[in-house]
Image 1 (cartoon, one colour):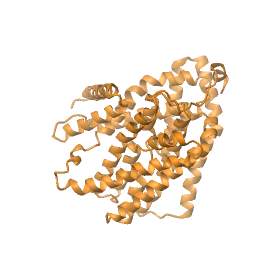
Image 2: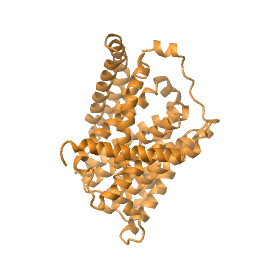
Image 3: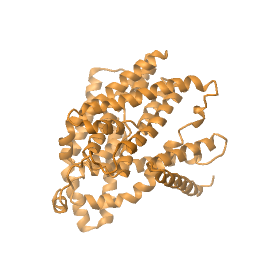
Image 4: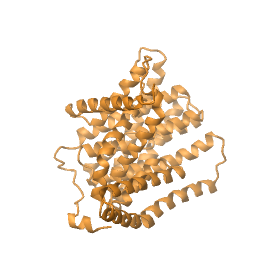
Length: 408
């Protein structure tokens, strides 16, 4: 392809996402399902030898990751420190069950299929994390991003990602033959805690004042650029200590959630998120190999059996995480359903296992099936579980506009 044709590829991927998203919305389904389906269908055409986006895959992945980070930044803008305090114990309980139950079930089921302990560890770790991006997009589409249940889901999902990626780091070190010691684990834990404390305690008031100053002296464009630079810096900081960039993006948004110019920042990011987050979900869909679903192919049958067993574990394990909400029985199922999608986080875990040789190709394919179906099942569950009038899904009362504008 000629260099300029990357723009044609971006146009085609965007049109595919818009078309499938429109169709999904008119079928009363989340738009993200349409975007994922568009990617899966494109992957099916690529498997027939039709060239399309592969030549620019690395560039597209970067753009998609930037879009996902912007989406998580926008979600973080909706989560205030006092909200975390109000739902903190519930989120911690949901995150704990959402990690322990899928990990143990995934490890046990994998061992029953005769895989090695290291492979079983990778499978269990891949089932622990929750896709914050996919769940956040669905909650936003349902217009319940400000509800109490949504805040529990998002906080628990971020905790899942942090702890899940922490577990994955330890297992990866074992797979690569690196020495694991209590000192190394303690150092990694200390770095993660220090990162959160520095951002939320030290940096938060400083960046709020800086964005307010830029808005007064430069205008909305300056505020948007400053916020974007801050988002990129914290995303890099998260990656530098072994976490995923989306964790840094979420924390960046949280640290600006009480800024006086929060609404201006949120508005400036919406068009960017609409395009590039959609691109990310289409690209996620391209990793789904629909040919694996054909049970008439003998080679697919063991993959499908293991995949279905792990799918049951993945869904049940996350639904059980809702049991941590002791005094709010009506939200248990909603929270559990919101924790189901694995999406990009499950793919990260699987890719690392594949690269270090711990996950054979067929096992990796089974894991991809689990990621694919949980990515579809989670949004569908939420669409049908959440009542349209939110009769039992109360929101956290929003502050008045004057109070919001005066906070920093």
